Image (cartoon, helix red, strand yellow):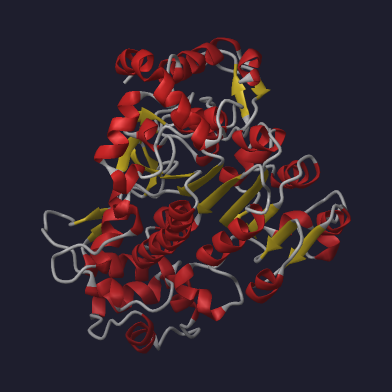
Length: 494
């Protein structure tokens, strides 16, 4: 990538990784053809093809533990139910460390996904020159896969249940030294790019304080968006009706509502936003790039909210189903599902007790924030509220007293639910564990095994390098002509 020239030593490391992955690789090599014949379910369209479309879905804070909890939640008895993620055949693990910490944050991890570069925590779309971390080192802008896709004439989109200016989506369409500069990120994202679809929360960073927002520069970016040709929407119905080439959807001042409470709002689901984004983006004949983030898995992990965490993971899985079904019908589409990191150190089974009481979670009907909001000022209705909204009809005196005295009753209610469900938490922050990677479609086999998270961007970037997007018939003809030459080369690079 041309940005490799900007970042010196780090670029060399990325180049070596990319060269190892792609050098000498024939996208029609005979070994891949053989695999295609052996595993038609996964490779019925030929895994040697380069993707025209890429859909990257990121479950923020979603480790294998969150995936497992959601699957067991769906299952009967002691068995796990099936998630859409379970249907992927190409599965791997990604190491998540950042340039300056074993435990990454979302900014550094998303920059790894978006630009193939390790960077420091809190940094967005920029990377240091040095391969090893040094204090006060300078950071340089690095080209993202979204920018590369746009340069190829593809349509692009970002979807999130968090603020659209939050770290993960920001890393694909902005370059800034700190993730907290969301007002600046909004300007870069909206005015310095031509992203066709932007859907999520964060309306406050598009409006000045005088109009109910947080901006201090008096800019009204919603007005600017309309001047740029965006159809601006703010609820599920208006999103459904949205037409035109560009759509900006801002459905909450801050992050979107937890999915467990979403029916109380007019906000669209992550599934609905994903469906609409694909519908709008696929109209571009040259293809598209779409990033979809299940952003609130992370927030539930930080707060140690068990029911919210599982519901957010299941909502994310619903969006994955939309993407995978599209890829099954459009065989030039690569779907990648992963996470930036795990949040909360979640466990099923706690304090030496073997078990997972999923019924304790199935009984929870609303978020603990909502439940806490139903308590009266004197907190004399604790038992009634928890029976109605959390399904807890045997609240003991100690639990009731803890809620009554709590500075944050929501946190105490969440702890009671976790304890009853036998869900454990080790932190209110991130952890350094490897996260799952699921892939389906052309080049999906490049994301198996244990990989570095930058390799995800390597694979996407290779798809947008200009070498792909060939007519499959031409590829098949080349396979037949070069099969003998490619076979030995392919074996060397497997």
